[in-house]
Length: 165
Image (cartoon, rainbow, N blue to C red; front, top):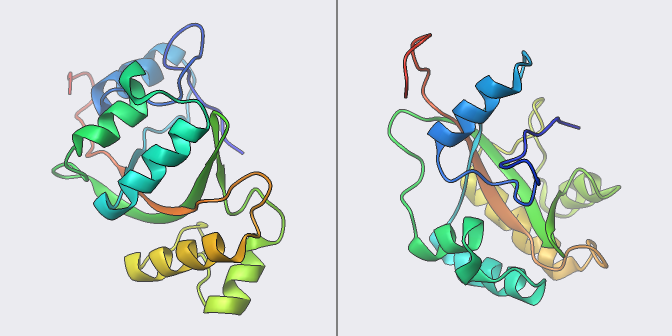
């Protein structure tokens, strides 16, 4: 489990518009131990993700994540450190990982041989995409998630203390 810093006071969205906005929110939270992570999806997965989010009621024209996915922004950014891949799926306004729905990590490992590293991430993109496809085809995320995707997690480059990014 992780603590999240909301994008705005209403907490309507978990996705920041830029790493800089996320860094500002982290600094303003006044708590130690918070990290900013970048999240990106393969271009080939974007149409399915957008359709899945639209089916869940998330309008792409409303901004935030669907709008940014539609723009096909370059990812990862310059200097970002790639941490690995997490299998995620959308469900009616929120996201789930394969680790939050009981037994899926074991099921994926038994069927595909793919398993997370000690930090819970898959290090190889092809393995992550293969595992996400198997999980989608298996239907084991039902009723919460029907479409799984491999999300690349990154850590923004370090910024010198006290300097704006």
